[in-house]
Image 1 (cartoon, rainbow, N blue to C red):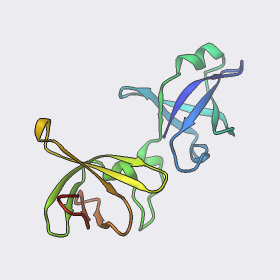
Image 2 (image 1 turned 90 degrees about the vertical axis):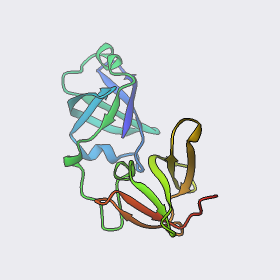
Image 3 (image 1 turned 120 degrees about the horizontal axis):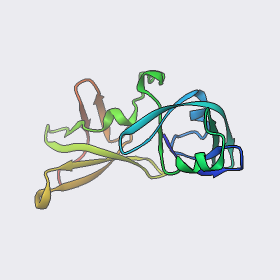
Amino acid sequence: MGRLAGPYGVRGLARVQVYTETLDSLLDFDRWLVGREGDWQVRQVADAAVHGDGLVVRFEGIDTPEAARALRGSEVAIRRGDLPPPDDDEVYWVDLVDCEVFNREGVKLGRVTNLLETGANDVLVVVMGSGEQRVERLIPYVAQVVESVDVPGRSIRVDWGEDY
């Protein structure tokens, strides 16, 4: 949901580059997961606020710029159980990763490996095969293309040709 970008000031605050749709989304949570390469630690948020195009945060136990600097480059996440359930017409991006994508004709186009935010619309990165046989498709995640999403069934149906 974000990344710690370095210290801010002299009291142990850290700058946060936010990846969420709205800048202040992380402010709804008082416990953040902070880590690198899968090594996560729960950090209690003592204080946080919007600052410019990001956030500044102070974690309990982090009281110096040096301690905040040590967290630089760490990713920020929220435990899944702490997130509100999505509305009926919404899904979390993480739930789309690894879904199989099929077109109207039932042809498997691949598996979602990532999503991109392009500004105009979100895009599914769909990959089939590997090595020299790898085919990557970029499929717009818009209502005109995505016909159905079955998160429990791990599948997405799209109006998209094999040769697009």
